[in-house]
Length: 99
Image (cartoon, rainbow, N blue to C red; front, side, top):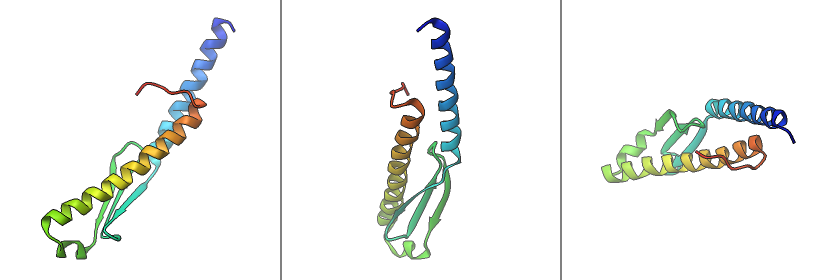
């Protein structure tokens, strides 16, 4: 394999990764906690798109409200992590890239 082939492969990989990143930014992934009292929607770059709080949430103590919101965020973040691993793995052919 000569240098021009390596450059071509690197450019193709760069294009695939850029397309995957664009696709991730357009995703909306939900995290749910408290039996639906809180729904957090994140995009594939961890930006919060929406936070939905049920009025019933506020029947709980302030500490419980915070815990439920945190749990919904963690649920969404875990799903985003899994999705990123899958999408970027497909884009890079399983090659691990530095973050």
